[in-house]
Length: 197
Image (tube, rainbow, N blue to C red):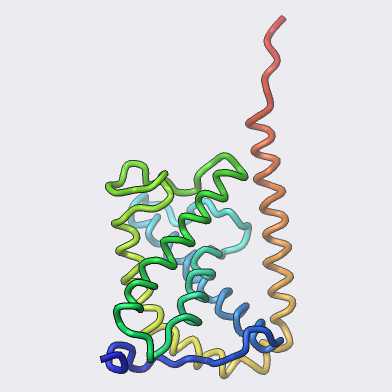
């Protein structure tokens, strides 16, 4: 049953502790972070009629999606029992979403998303209805999308070998600038106003 459940799924057995392994991870992270940005903005368009939803980073990337997808594609293989696949497709995105939301709230005293009005939610960071959506999206990713991404990477790998380090530096710079921007905004909102004498 395992083989039929993930038919077509391929695993790129790269040692993640090599230069090639790191380059591969950055490629997957970049692609899935961009897909996440497209997905969230499309959802925002259909629910609020505005395509551009506020982003933590400056660029068109949602790291939460990149991180969750990288974990999924490296932890799940065609030999993984289907029950474990479903569990991972539920747990990994949900845990990444909760950790991201809680960390952003702790550091910057604000929430980029809030499920407080949604049933079965936890601290507004996660909720069962969206976690169920993550299961479907994660299965779609590992079963149908990721084999195509592996093929694309196979074609692009010689060129990617020249630019992956620059892409990694871009993400680092974007993260540093975003932290600076949101930290300054937090300081401004926390500044006490002087009472009129």
